[in-house]
Image 1 (cartoon, one colour):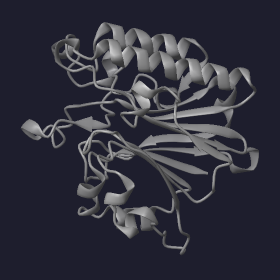
Image 2 (cartoon, rainbow, N blue to C red; image 1 turned 45 degrees about the horizontal axis):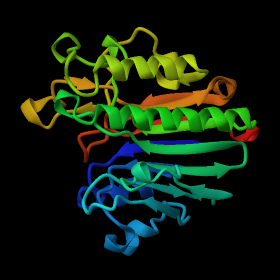
Image 3 (cartoon, rainbow, N blue to C red; image 1 turned 30 degrees about the horizontal axis):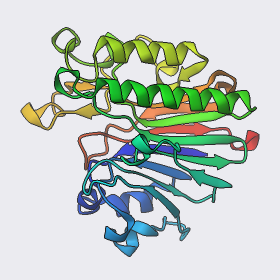
Image 4 (spheres, rainbow, N blue to C red; image 1 turned 120 degrees about the horizontal axis):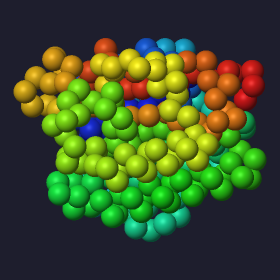
Length: 262
């Protein structure tokens, strides 16, 4: 099973850059998207019901922000989940921050973590969201489920995860409090699947500023993740960054799971 996560930075914008053609070619089982900046009624029929090259139609699910043109997440899936829901906390659901899909064998959480903003203006809100997500994951694991938390965490965890760590120590996404939460999250029994496969390897990023030709020069940040609970990790066949794919300031990330064990 192949699951892709991508912050598209505006679904209607990326539609004009070949997004539907990419879905058609990719043939992924599940595609999680973040920062949709749209409500379902604003989307074309093709975006609501895309089809892959085998003629299979995706089910689509949406969590949109009350504020128009802001935040939002979606899930395209060939396999209909048993249940789909949001976090159930209005202050986060009102910004369309997360969708939780219950599949046979695991529970998928597609999340768009808040940006803490300059000077940490929204740091308290972000950390509250982080803690709510961790509590949810812990509860699901305690209930006997495997979990896969994917999406844009808006956190570069370690110096290896961004091109210029020293210059960004006081910038949103690399604040000490954000990095400490990521350490606590992983220490609570979760695995950063990409880093496990690429320990000590720098230069792997998922976001580049549109300014100063940052992507061309690979001056980026790794802030998008596929993380799983420790017991689920043996079922991960691969975890990779698809930096060759354009259309957004983020690139997609992909995880492959052992189909026979789900």
